[in-house]
Structures are given as structure tokens and as C-alpha cells.
Image (cartoon, rainbow, N blue to C red; front, side):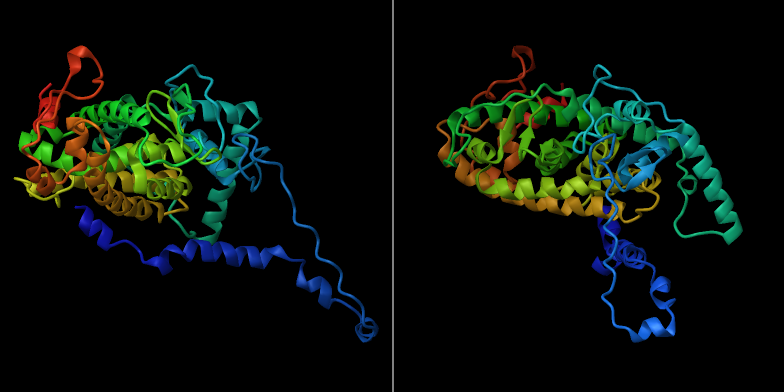
Amino acid sequence: GIRSQVLRLPGPGRLGDGAGLEGRRERRGGGPPTTVETQSTSSEEMVPSSPSPPPPPRVYKPCFVCSDKSSGYHYGVSSCEGCKGFFRRSIQKNMVYTCHRDKNCIINKVTRNRCQYCRLQKCFQVGMSKEAVRNDRNKKKKEVKEEGGGGGAPPDSYQLSPQLEELIAKVSKAHQETFPSLCQLGKYTTNSSADHRVQLDLGLWDKFSELATKCIIKIVEFAKRLPGFTTLSIADQITLLKAACLDILMLRICTRYTPEQDTMTFSDGLTLNRTQMHNAGFGPLTDLVFAFAGQLLPLEMDDTETGLLSAICLICGDRMDLEEPEKVDKLQEPLLEALKLYARRRRPSQPYMFPRMLMKITDLRGISTKGAERAITLKMEIPGPMPPLIREMLENPEMFEDNGDAKPGPPADPPSEDDSPGGGPGGLGSVLRW
């Protein structure tokens, strides 16, 4: 289960090793060669002179593919490490990607992981060379053979079994079909309380509660499509969803964070800034959520990794009140293995990325705990009852029991007249039985 995985995570000193090596490499190669300074005649050494200024740092154009900071010329064009690695893997593995929109997605630093098809096309458009990748691979193979090996396992060493490949494909498809990526959305904004914080903007709350209800229904649909989830008892399915729904909702919204504008985008395209998110009901959670979104950016998770992390977060045997925790743990094990091997295959030089992803689950649980606390104050701020699915997601069982005498009405703005999940404590159960 996830607890044993977290126990084996490398400590801070270990996670820093990669950065430390990078720093040592930069220090070793950053300044002018010292041998030039020592090759002077004895007469020159007697004459004091000012040291020659160091050469200016080499400046590259921004990455031609995504406009991020370039690390040099790779495969024929100026590019960042991320796009270099993506292009190399795509060519070496003969990857075939699909665009879920119109094959014209915008590729930049924020959106580059959203559509692999359009990113690869952009690589070709700006002039990246397939032949350069093949030559580079042959050169590296020759070097490894001559040196008798090298550090870091090559991508081919992370072979996935057909069963794991099938699991990854199913989870990725379930995620993508229940959660459109940022580049697929037509963004729109609102001027409502955009420049100053208030306790609660009822207009924004109404819109947020409508979208959150739809999002919860999509998370339930995602769960039902995960291999093995529906073999659990209905009681355990509800327990897992109630425990993880807010975690997954937060993870999803945070993957739609745009740092340049400091905004988040919902599934209908509504884009709110930090102040509006506060006023829509997030309140004291706001800065915590935005900080988490910023921490996700360096991981550069793609849709498959986000889907697998969501599944691991949901199917977790340490949740309270499970009837069959061992069965849940058994379902989680292949998901952990799939994410570990997929992440390492995608980033062979960054083996620490998998444990870093797992650590985000701990952060999400911390946010969810604060969300349950926020539910108490939020109920006093809104004029009517809280929509039942949001109520179930926000409230822990003890709080739910304390408020069992409240009779909530139908969900606010359900997805359609025919799809109303029904009110009351059985909200999630009703959605599961659709």
C-alpha cells in the first residue's frame, strides 16, 4: 500500500543529490579553464596584472517549442530539457499520439504536457531532427559499451508487463474522458469581485457549487472505470469516494493552474483569479491551494501520471471504516507499480520524481482536512443548504452525524434534469448506482 511506499521515500539529503551533482557540474565547467592561467612565463609572473574578466555567460534563445528557458541546441534547435527529452523519447519509441481537440493546441511552458500530439508536431515544425536523435542514441550506446556501463538506468530497463500497460491505458483514458485538459477549454472570465477579497460572493459561490457538483459526478465516473473498483462493496466504494473526492478535485483544479496570470480554470472554461477563488468559497484555503498548484509545476505531470496519482489517492486501504481494506490494498499495488515504472521510463534521469509525486498525496490530505474545517464556517455564510454532494465531500463522518437532522434540498444546478443525483446522505450512493 501507499504507507509502505512512503516509508521507503528517500530523505531530503537523498532527493538533493541530483541537484548537488548538477551544481558540481556547473561549477566544474562554468569558469574559464585554469590551465590557461598557469601557462605563463616566469617573467610574466613577476609583473602584476589585472586578471582578465571571465567570458560572458552563453545566452541561448528561448526554447523554440514551448518558449521556456533553453539549455542549449538539441537535435538542431534551441530547446529546453523537457522538450529535448520528450522529442527523444517520442522518436526512439516510435510513439503515436492523439489530439483530443482540433490538432492546433497552443504549446507553451504551462500547456506543453497537455497534448503530446501537438507538442510533437511543434517539435517538427521548429526543425527538430529525427536523424539527430538516432545518431545521438548510437553515439551513447557506443560510449556505454566502451566505458563498461554508466550511471542511471536506460529507459529500456523499465519494461512494463502487458498487464501494466493495459492498466495504464485504462486509467489514462478514464482520466482524460472525465477531465478535459486546459488546452481543450475555451477560457472565459468574470469581473465579479475580481480585485478585493470579501467573505463570500454569492454569485461566485452559486457558480462554483454548480461546477463542483458536476466535477464530483465526473470523479465518480472516473472511479467506476478504474479496474477493480466496482468489485468492492458499495459501502467501501462510498467510503473511498467520500475520503478522496476532495483530494482528487483539488488535484484536478490545480493541474489547470496558469502561473503567469495566477488563475485556475474550471471544466466549463470559467477562469478565476486568486481573489475570486477566495470569494467563491475557498476562503482561508485559497493560498494553500495555490501554493500546492505551484509545487506541482516542476513535476511536469502528464495526463497519465495525474490519472494514476488520482487512482492511487482514491484506492487506498488506510481509509477509516473500510469493510475490506486488504482487498483495497491489493487493488492499489499495481497502480503504484504502474506509476513508478511509467514515471521512470518517462524521465530516466530523474528517479526521484515518483516519490515526489507520492508525497503530494500527503499534501492533498492536509488540504482536505482544512476543507472539512472550512465547511463549518461556509455553512454559516451561505443562505441555503449546501448541495448534498459537496456536503458529503467536505464533511467527515463525525461532522456528518452531528448534522444528520438537517434536510438538504435537491442539488444546486444539477448537470441536467435527467441526471439529478438526488439529495440526502445517499448522494454518492445514488450516483454510484446510475
